[in-house]
Length: 160
Image 1 (tube, rainbow, N blue to C red):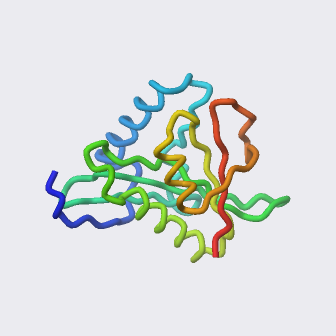
Image 2: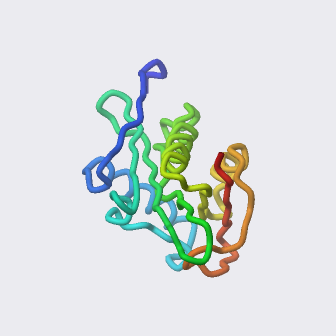
């Protein structure tokens, strides 16, 4: 990959063939790390407007990363967005694409008046956990429909 190639983020239909290919790679990776009951894959339809947002990180014509957010507005707790399907191709890691995707997803939540971002990740993903901590996410308990799982780490961040 050319390190000088300019990348940009853009909204992406999660049903787009390249998005589907990235999600399949992500699911295969997660499937190698965790049993099926510990994987919580959001279906593409859950990341479409008005209930979600999905972004792609494009470098030229190649989709190198993706990430989405699912909007939650429960009656009993503040509204939040759940970060889902964040994934960057292995050969494109280390270029800041995941951080850019996270920043844009958070900005979209703020623009919608949503004050919290939450996520679930696995304990066997130190790079992802490190990224989330660097971005200000702190551990929290299970939220939404999640149950406690020793292989899951739940995190949240108060947005400005």
